[in-house]
Image 1 (cartoon, rainbow over the protein chains, first blue to last red):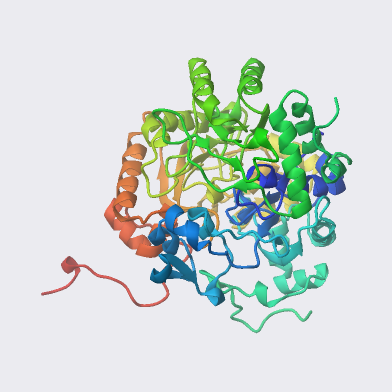
Image 2 (image 1 turned 180 degrees about the horizontal axis):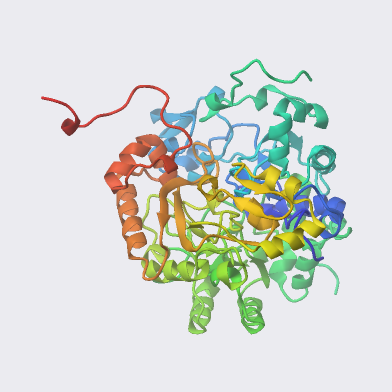
Amino acid sequence: MVGGIGRRISNVVHTQGWVHCHSAATDASGLTKSIMDELHEYFTSKDLPNKVRIAVACCVNMCGAVHCSDIALVGVHKTPPRIDHENLKNACEIPSTIASCPTSAISPDPTKKSVKIKLEKCMYCGNCYSVCPAMPISDAKNDGIAIVVGGKVANLRTPPKFSKLAVPWLPNNPPRWPEVTDAVKTILVAYIAGAKKYERVGEWIDRIGWEKFFKVTGFAFTIQHVDDFTFARETFRTTPTFKWT
Amino acid sequence: MSKKHQTPLLDELKKGAFPSFVTEIEKAAVHSDMSADLLGQVELSYREKVTHWKHGGIVGVRGYGGGVIGRYSDIPDKFPSVAHFHTVRINSPSGFYYKADSLKEICDLWDKYGSGLTNVHGSTGDLVMLGCRTEVLEPFFAEITSRGWDLGGSGSAMRTPSCCLGQSRCEWANIDTMGITNDITQHYQDEMHRPAFPYKFKFKAAGCPVDCIASIARADMSIIGTWKGDIQINQAEVKNYAAKMDIQKEVIDMCPTECMAWDGKELKINNEECNRCMHCIARLTKALRPGKEKGATLLLGSKAPIVTGALMSWVIVPFIKMEPPYEEFYELIDKIWEWWDENGKNRERIGELIERTGFPRFLKEVGLTPSAAMVKVPRRDPFFFWSEEDVQK
């Protein structure tokens, strides 16, 4: 299939998923195939307001520029890692395992020659598992897919943008992931209806406002949408000027 | 040929208009038991909704500390042919150009030694050869290197640098991205094949601010081509565009700095106000060309969310002539790496280190002159450091 040029969906950057990766929270090739079976006309022949870069990362390591794509899917966990104390003392370096945690949820457990996790601090990023194989985090019932939108890397008109959270979690539902493909279609349809010519998804949302984005897509705005990670402060609205939705 | 494993869930993904990875793996499975067992294992993942690849396992070839990613099945009894399923990263040529013969050669070799499956290209920019056993690594490595190929980077090393196709096919390129990428690769062979850094370090070179290689999001060091001087205008070509598009609406009104004017006859640009976003050049390619003094802006620090949040590269050198032998550039890189080595924690990317220790300290210790081009806005709170020489005794 030939396409992806100009004001279309470009080739989907995606990762290795269940086909080849040990930390995959979902499959990337299957998601890509399912989405593009639905949207292939926007790859080959139907014009959009501007280029739409769709990306899929099977976990938050995000091999591929998912954090700066127009519509991006990322495999996420919802439950903390489980500690295999027996293997941990042989397979893992305790200081680097503790240091791997961005929220300082991991501390030493000297009695077990292992580590412990403050569960309420864990944000399920899985970085400890990258460092220490004895802390598996995959969870078939709770792993799923988050959708982030509005990122771009080009400097055309506006500076590059990070993608931001649109949907915090949708179920892993292979082989066709209908909930995810529906949500991607919802975003694309709203973008086509609302964006001006040459506006990228992120430029369109910045113009109408994120509160309006949630209205036109119908996505619920949840507690997960409010940032409490490293750069949170800059995301709070410091003006009473917003749109009623 | 009958299938080794029944794969009803994956079979669903053979349907539909878009090319199917399942169909491709099935083709490889005709002559590779490894690919046949791969299908079986992936089907199980589809059923159970978890991956069946085991964590880690360090494998490699003699003399190299990277380039091979170890991968093992966690259920080798069920799928013995993918008990080992290592990835080999092969350094791609700059701009991803290949002769058809070269691609055939590499694929034939992978049919001989591995699963016959590749990712061209993986997210790293390498030619990714998927799936082989530990014992074939040395013979495969010997054979590809004897034919002029080499492994790419992995682990805490300089990763395979990559670039857009630059001057080879693009009229907007301000620097020779392919030459630069090739030069960096040759210059830092040791840093690439023998991981000795706190963590990974990626270079990407883009010919202009459109940044088709996504360097600003994906490279610790983003080299982005830019220019000084006036945008070159061909007024006759502007008129040709005017016949088929609304220049006022699609170009002038979309200029972020409002530095352009069009009266129906002549296009004017107030170049002093231009920030080189590329929108007008992208819309009126035949009529507009970048200014004549070419160079690059160097930006540092981008990375994905792990560990403390995603970063985009930010400006550390507003303008540098990127011309061989790139002495000034390499001098700066060596200083940055030394500073990172000295101060970085294990698995701390350069961007996160600067985030932790402060951008001013980085500038001072690496010897870069602060410039308003490096920040979006200056500091807002009145807390800042002075040094001994700034105060009266």
